[in-house]
Length: 573
Image (cartoon, rainbow, N blue to C red; front, top):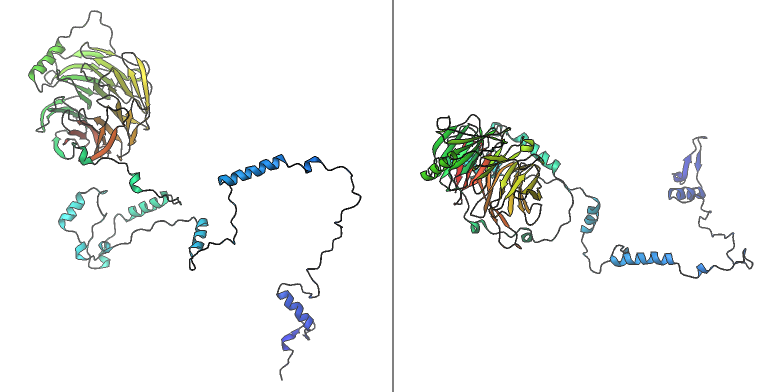
């Protein structure tokens, strides 16, 4: 028969005897297992014994009367309470909601509350996943996904940024015949770079109408005319074409470049009429804006050559030669900053049209004419105090407008109407009154290094291009800071220009593009100028990190001429 006390029998390891536990011992073991006191007789919640009486004594320790502060409300407590009340009224302090307050109506099977509570603490946002491959990325795609020869040719002629896909679907009979993907490492690197540079953070979602964020601008079709297509390409230069200028009548074009030549073109027929060879590259060229003179200013190293073009009306060309040859030096001639020398009939260069040579001390970067055609200015970046020199053609004299150069001067421009001179340094544009010899205004651009500048025909607005890919529009009467800054180019902006008749302005860049913008300036001073980009022109091929270096509008038509590092001059109409 089985032992009934087997379940309460334990073996003593010291005496090696079997001991039968009593009921009291079993109760103690059960209490310890249930985390209670072992002794069931001990009550842990015994009544509290008050060892010190709480009854007020008949005879207190001190018989001092109660102070008055115990009966008067505290002023500081009142201020603190009012401060808390004011915070509650303004919503700075919100009372805690009791857990018992439950909504009257709620979803029985709703489980999003727990996820919303966890989302407050879990701020990790996973990276966006890449798009899954489709049928066109298969090694054996269906026939409708395979491109034709015309589609392949059109895909290869497109720019990489304009292609709809970065690959062409191809068909292979088996997977082992598929070659390695050439751009795999580059695409992986760009993907890792995007994940590294892209900040992932939680932002508050705003309920904003997307149509309100887009500025209300007119359509480009309503702003015509402006150049849209490439019409002519002028071939002939053998190097980088750095500069160009258009005849005031709009019939002729002159260009110069690194091949040490100056070329005259007929605009309508793209025919090269004349080529003049120089000893060094042609840095800048400017056609005289006066219709009564047929002159071109050419910058070659540290000299400025004034040449007769011999194009157009023969009476004007002969009158120009007569004007230059009829000069008589004054009796009390002073020493000039620049040496003026006239090329005689039998001297070298007279047959090519060269008439005057102005020798400077340093290399020249830019030459520009005044609107009347008698004054022209040159910029010498390394000239220190003589960085800007203004020459007068009729009297053959030169003057230095500044005693001290404020910064590295980049370019200068004359005001089209008034006797103002705009001088652009690396970050600032200063406006000087030449008649009063004083500084009128100092404009501060947001660019790091200014490259070019152009004045509106009205004279109240300026556009400035910079090497850090910015184009700044200044309203001189409005502020000393840019009215609007455009960042459409991907590389340095080389040149900016205004049209003399149409509300157009353009900018060219080293990325090989020319951006045409509509810039309407209203006569009403209360209305801001309207600036709308209307066309992106392509055609020049960037070579050696150089793209389009100069651009100029036609004087009467909405056409633009550009020249670049691909040794061509192009006309867009």
